[in-house]
Length: 222
Image (cartoon, rainbow, N blue to C red; front, side, top):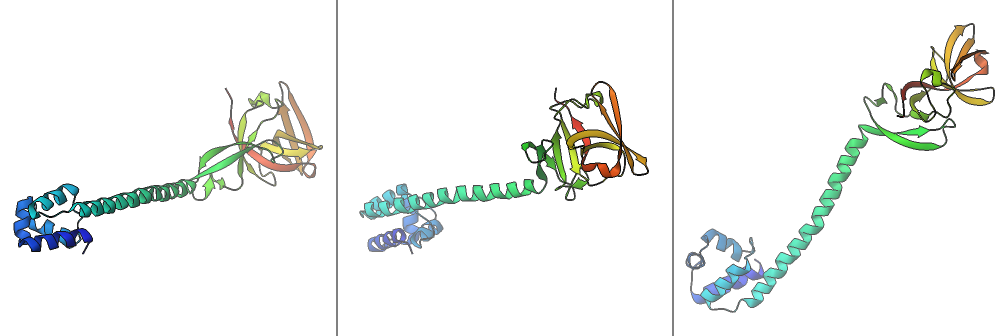
C-alpha cells in the first residue's frame, strides 16, 4: 500500500465511510478508489483535494507526496525513452549494414581513399563479386578517352590476379600502373590497347604484366 492510499483509507475510516460511499461522493468508481487505497493507482491532485474536503482532513502533505511520485515517474520515463530510441537506432543501423556496404573509391595506388559509395549486398556479394574484393577506381588520366574513359570518371572494379578473358584492367607494367584494354592472344601473349585520340597497341608477354583489377562498369562525370 502506498503512503497516499494509506492516508486516504485512514481518513475515510475515521469519517465512518465505506469505499462505496466515498467513491460516490468523489464521483469515481468504487473499484478505482479501492485501487488507489491499495496503491495500485496514483490519485491526481484534483481527487486528493476533493477527498480532503469530503473527509474534512488536511491532505496537502499527501498532495506533495503524489506530486513527487508522479514527477519521479515522469523523469524515469524520460530517461528510458531516449535509451529505447538509441537501441532502436542501433538495430536499424545493424540491419542496414547487413544489406549495404560502403565501397571505397581509390586512386591507382589503391592506398589513397578518395571517397566511398553505398552498395547493396546480395548473398554476401556485391554485383556477384566477393564484397571484400570490390572497389571503385578513379581514372587518373585521359589515355583511354577513346573508350569514353576520362580523367575523374569512376569505374567499378574487383581485384583479380590473372586474365581469363579480354576486358579493361588496372595493371603494372614497365614500372607504371595504368588502365588498359587487354586482349588475350594465346601463347602467353597479351595485346595492350590504349586510346588517347589515336589507337596504340603493345604486345607483351604474360609474365611482363602484373594484373591488379578488372574494371566492370564506368560511371562518368557530367
